[in-house]
Length: 163
Image (tube, rainbow, N blue to C red; front, top):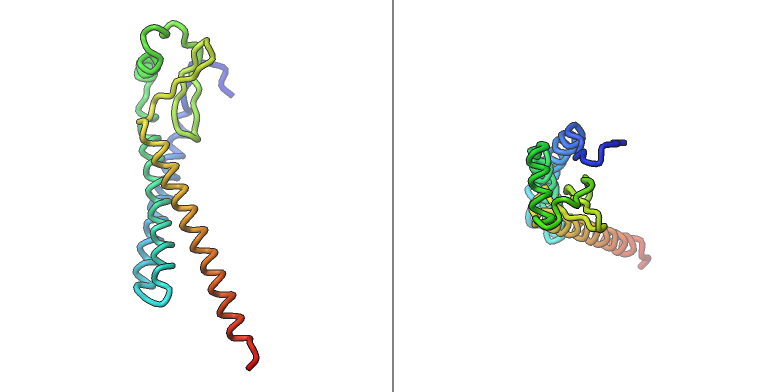
């Protein structure tokens, strides 16, 4: 653990997060495309499209997360200091006592002596948009899974019913 209260994110961890989120985005987008193309418009088309859209939403969330890590990777010591001073305002610049790097939500917190933490480092839209896309992906995937199970159970009961 870092002992320097003014240390930011570990650049190697950010680079790893960037590579993993880009790989996840590519894999999820490919899954969404192949699922939609393979099944097309058939009996289960709404369900397949729901699954594909869920994969696209998850890919979008991964892309936004990668975009945020790019912002944090470009913060050198000078830009990190300037961003914190801008976030806390000129009246509280001398009260900054530490930086609080976070990965979920992605950002750099500038902690002041009064106990408040001001977020900086990534655009303000990034974390809410990534969270909304991730929630949408989980909801669509969960509903798709439940509906598939419901249909399979219904079909199984229909096939095993004795005349």
